[in-house]
Image (cartoon, rainbow, N blue to C red; front, side, top):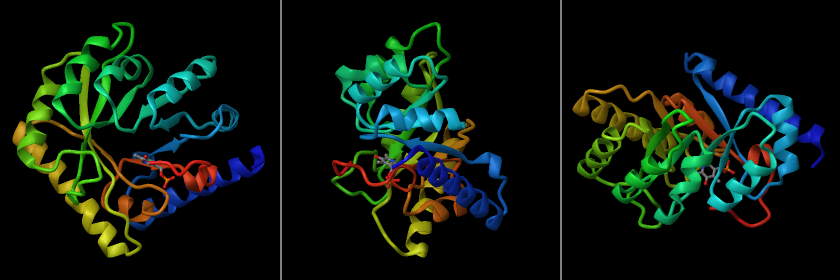
Length: 235
Ligand SMILES: *Cc1c(COP(=O)(O)O)cnc(C)c1O
């Protein structure tokens, strides 16, 4: 894909987000687009960054770290959105502004310990598995979600911001919305129980963007509709 085509697709997604926001009476500026660049080239990222896209999402620690090093001259905001092994927390803590996929207690202490003092606290979203799909990461019950949230809250180097979810794939708008509504209600329940503000809902990808925005997404993660098909089918 040429840079011009890439930028056109990216602008089209921005327009789509804007239209959805208007349709559901939301402020378009309250929805942040993360361009999910996993398995796409540093050249493609550079082209979009030059065009004005600031936030990029990556699923694999090593890939994110290498890309961040190669693109260190650009002011890119890296979001880690993939499954994380506890022995790789250091790289996420040193490279990303935000982790969307914190899903177990074991990751909390190492992420906090490795977060450099020179950076602001690492923004944390807890991944929830609302469809209880065994194939997917994420906490499935409210009690473990509360425990995880409380563990993050005790860490000064981490800043709990909200929830992330990847619902089961569906082509039906009502089904998509029902899943995202569950995430929003869970966020509300958690915020109330722990008496804190949890502003962020990271939900919505290429195929369910509109439903996610209808249900209150503040961060959408779009890969395919911007960059095209990934060479290796991604997670
Ligand atoms: C790959 C991925 C995306 C982007 O998915 P597309 O369907 O390509 O838009 C978003 N979120 C997560 C967690 C992903 O792994």
